[in-house]
Amino acid sequence: MATKEPFLQQVYFPKSPDTPNIDFVFVHGLNPSGRENHPFEAWTHAESRIQWPRDFLGPDFPNARIWIFGYNSKVTRGVSAARISDHANNLLRFLRQKRSMTVNQIVGSNGQGLSKIPIIFLGHSLGGLVIKQALLNARDDPDNYLETWNATCGLVFFGTPHRGGNTGALEEFGVRFAKLFTNDSTANDLLMCLKPNSLFTQDSAERFSKQLKNFKILTFFETRPTKFHGFSKIVVNRDSAILNAPGEVCVDLDRNHRDICKFGERENGYDIVKASLSDIVARVLLLPGMNVNPDSTASVTWSQDTPQRHSQSTIKSCNSELASPTSSPFTIAEVEEMNDRFLEAVKALDALLIHNWIMDRDRRAHLKPELIQSALLDLAGLKEPTEERFQVEAGRFRDHAVCVILDECNSNLECLDDVLEATPLILAALCGREDITKLLIDAGGSLQARDGIYGRTPLSWAAKNNFIGTAEILLTALDNRQDQQTIQSKDIDGHTAFDLANRNGHKDMARLIGSRSTRSNASFTNGI
Image 1 (cartoon, helix red, strand yellow):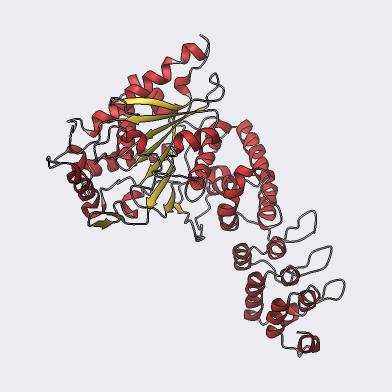
Image 2 (image 1 turned 180 degrees about the vertical axis):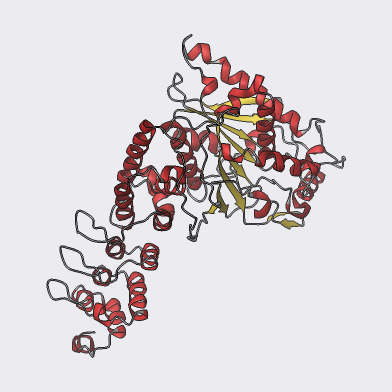
């Protein structure tokens, strides 16, 4: 699919062409091999040939339009003399043209027009720098590009070298790759911009830093070295990839620089991208007033907390200082709509939205405390997502959501659910949620609490349901407090945690509890 550069090509059309609600614009990075179809191949998985913007993202956001911007990013064989600023201006011109072309076709003379629907830019490597430069150019030229600036709500960066490549690794990689195909010179303005702390990246970073609060930013950085003909390095390291922007969400992907933006399946990377984009889209489409006018003094600001780095494998503490806003950026109607949307998220167990709205201090200040309590109980307990699209997010972000509720909200750890009349810690133990159990214990959840139906403690529930890892966490906490009484406490039927394990045939669990008990238990000695 070779198309003459530069171009902006639509690769996904909304199901209902009359009602598109968001534009995703993809901007590729360096093209060291000189491939003519690089703008499309940059987002295409080599083995499966899945072009995920078209094949995954489109169906997941059926009312979106998805665009791919192509420009000459070759470093040899047909190198362009254009600078990053020139490519950025081309991107702006194409966007203005394409987004205004369909206004008369789709919207009547009294309609708002598609030039105002929100934009989310996604850039790989050098493409992220082109996006940043385009936004700076748009702000500097409001006569032509004010609508593009106002419409931009989200930025997604895949391995973008905001401070240049890793000690020259990105430039070196581009040169080595290019020389495999040609002996031509690789001197190029684009490569110069990728040097560590180049004048361009320094100037761009300084100017763009003043605009960071205007956008929701999602950053992905690589954790595997790129290997190619004797080259084996992390091309864009974490320090260069992260902007340290207010409210920036940073995610490490277990991929190298070339593959960080290619997904051949819906798991192992794309699920995180989709979940994070879902939150940005929900913010923009469900709450009015999120797009910022550069001339407006009353702008919506995102959370000013330190960026939360959500690892694919570990829970990171989400500590930040809670500050009460002096003035609300939301109207009364928007606050009501916000709480309705949050209630829907709790009912659906949309863990990612719950997490991100609690992290956003402006929203957090307006959420009803009873809804936050309901979220804590549902996240800790038996509830599972009502929709398939939230299942992956729940598996990955459930623990994070509990973490931020405990850190950011004055949560009542002794609140009870409506079914079992149980605390969040009892529910977590009952379900075997080890990480949530640890978080609740560390936050001060009562180990002695009992549910209102069976009179069982967290340990008794873990024992009955044979969650050995959870039981070990609870036993360690009880041992640290020298609380043997709770280990041996009985439910309303007179059964201890040991008895419940033994009666249900959980021999390993019974051994574990028996070994931690001070009593000489005859049933333990004779029965196991």
